[in-house]
Image 1 (tube, helix red, strand yellow):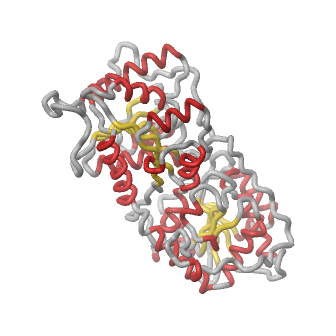
Image 2: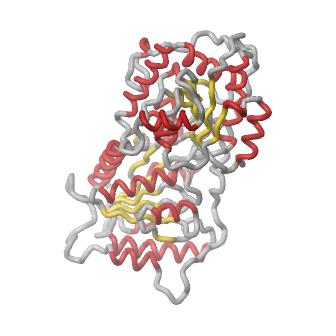
Image 3: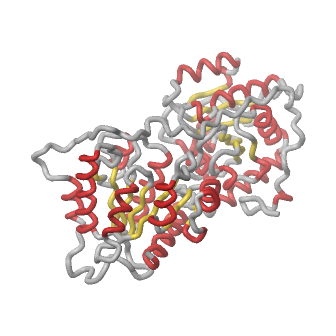
Length: 461
């Protein structure tokens, strides 16, 4: 049998019976009902456009409007290989993995010659990042709940469809999905018809209520899930036909994230690490969901030989992250409490992320929930570093079974790290498995798989 990576499981030895069983496993703290911090449905409309100025959505769409004679019949279908016009609806407040997924897709589509509009929420972190990326995002009250605001938004989106004539509209969150469904029905038989795609990159499984079932089974032309657990939920629990559900994992930029030997040497020298030091690294913002506290406890126990009686004094810890929901001062307090502040580093924000990853001997994803897209995992694997992880989100789609442990199980994570540190052959097998898996998860793979879905929608919508 093969693991997810395509490497025969026989060549991917599972962890031995845990020699670190002396510590009771910390219970997982998964909170399936909890969303990403700050992602809310706004009850009030926030305008950033003065009343006497033109609507930015109208003016921007007008600049990209298709001339009347350029598309004499309908927006759909388009010939295979021809450029597409898409609208990416990225109404996410924070620049989290969902926002990154939608905006990276928009960037790739534009680079490949496909006209793409990006819709977002004015004044938010993700909107400003879209601007910094040169995506010219259009500010709209996509998360509004006020009925008068929604009526105005519907009119704006209607004009956008008429002027831009998209082949595909891709909603990366659900707040305005109903409006797009109404517009799709309105234009179903006219010259402005379009395909509607719903991408689900949220950690929460969608509810199976009647409106949600109708939207996903009868309105959406395709559903894209960012991991297989989500895809299976759509097909088995929500009844979406399997041929309309697609699992597409986000792609990593291999031109940026690759092993950097010189950078590895420089970073290790900067932090005073010797060649025989074994550096375990966690890449990610400081947040309880990312499991920094659990990993600190794990490393402290391994250094002291708490579980198997074998101290590991050469073990070092890199926390490649920065202030977020959890302040850096809190993380430093955890390090002091565990007695490993002297052998641990917090990188903060740095421009040489690939070099910092390359300085690791083993990457760790210790997350307690989430990781439905797992950017950090992809970046670590792209830098040719072996990786162990908890079984959350997309991680079982990325790693062989022998590299996975239950979320919150400190003893099991200690066993995984100890096995990697004590067995160089296993560490090399794991590195090779990660390298093989990431070969099919580059930016071009992300783009082409998505385009395959879009073109299929154009043929069948």
